[in-house]
Image (tube, rainbow, N blue to C red; front, side):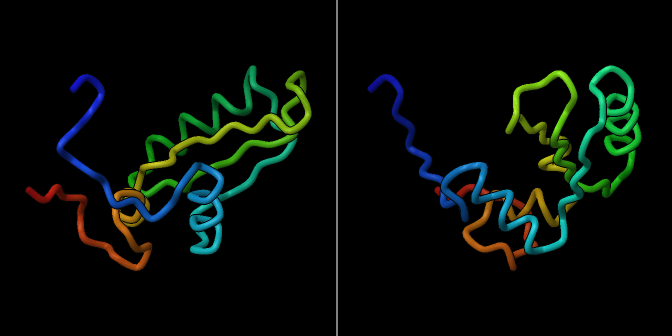
Length: 100
């Protein structure tokens, strides 16, 4: 039974795009366009990751990267996003838990 698990997760999204759309509807996402990866993204990451409830940040139109390339930062930070990412509903704020 290689690759199988006895834990079946119930997740409120099917892929990252769907998760991002849900997070955007909740106002949990900040979008930054045109930041360079050599200084600005690093500085933003330092500030956001140190904040207790820092926002999820999507960097778009990054100079030197292919068109359409995006960078997602701080996806699971904050109680609301972390809990919602593991639950079947985004309205649930209880912590993630496994059931036997």
